[in-house]
Image (cartoon, rainbow over all chains, first blue to last red):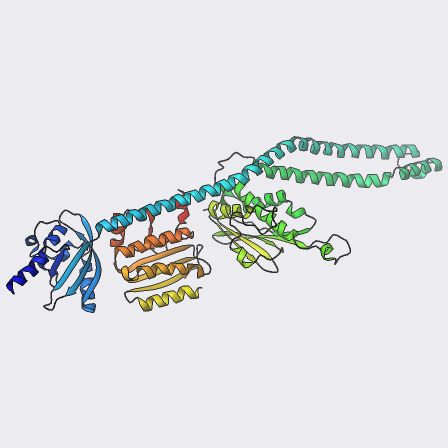
Length: 422
Length: 139
């Protein structure tokens, strides 16, 4: 029997795991060589009279272990961070159980290296995730730059070509208006002289009077006098509209690296409406409730582009409704069937902008993918599926906003919200 | 709000007597979900805790920000701390901002030891105003 006891004791001494036998207050009564080594000492003798809890980085965890032991008599896994004499931190998993004499046996397992390896792997994972986020961002910028670049080139060319002719057309039409008024006044005076005595027609001779009347009728002078004024007025407002359009286009001709600035959402909306002609299409009933709202922060070019894409999307949807001609239910007259409505509002934090159309309902399973690149509900060849992706990127990543879609039989609504500029 | 999410929390609390979860939806500008942890987060309950975040899709509206409040944590193991890292990755993949609040000293120390501190945004108050996490990603 003594021989066997000796072997048992030796087994504890040379056990590959650190082993401690302690009392309830963690006083070390027995330990082995690996326990000493684990705590940065050379022999178990050096641990006698010391408390195990003094090596705990977080001593309060001793009481947690004791409570668990009292609940369950043995605790198979309890992780503790030890601080050894060299101030080195080591992490160990302990298996503990109560001995019948009121002592506690604790067998530890050093998991520091394993944790370091796991964490290195996790660190690599995090780095990969960051790299992936950067790649996605680059992808977003590429999509954005590609669509902006082609539109920008087109816009720059158009604006340049249209600006000068527009300038002299506008100036000429005003001169023409003035000249016409002068000519009209001159003709009327001349007629008065021919009639005999200025403007009093009663003094004119009958043949002269008849001649003037005949000539006026033959050349439809009364009608021309009436028409020309309204023709000039219409042309002038048409030119004004073109000038406005060219001015709106100029936002795309600015050089890249546009800086974030405070922007007016109604102004960006107005530019987008002008550029898409959403308010001037014969088949669309357009209405807007645009309220004055606080500014947002970002790039004007991007916001206008996003609004243009949303409007073009709404126009396509509203125009894709079957017309009465298609269904044979009208008498050949042009009937407006499409409806587009824009609404803006705000609260203390957000600017809301809704784009509503009465186009075909979008299926629920498609709503979740509508902002995915290359996803389109249009017929093959009619849409690249990048328009709404670009909108999402601009609103969510460029402006820190949100965009949601709701679609029912009555209407499809794109709800854009952008945080106010702070 | 979400029957699956709430049912999961109820079941979790019934099965894990060492850790109790409570939640709160805050209808602020970011639709915040605050999760309060009370008890011990260790090997026994870390994986079911991580799985809770698989039910996020079921929440309407989807939270844009999640705050895990650690004030009530009594004990945490490295697996428990690792669960925060896994959840952070899950949230980032979904574009959700993830924050820890009222973090005990041990969690802070271990995150530093492991070199993960820079990945976590830690709040002193779960209701503290924050900037979206993607801002820090873009910096």
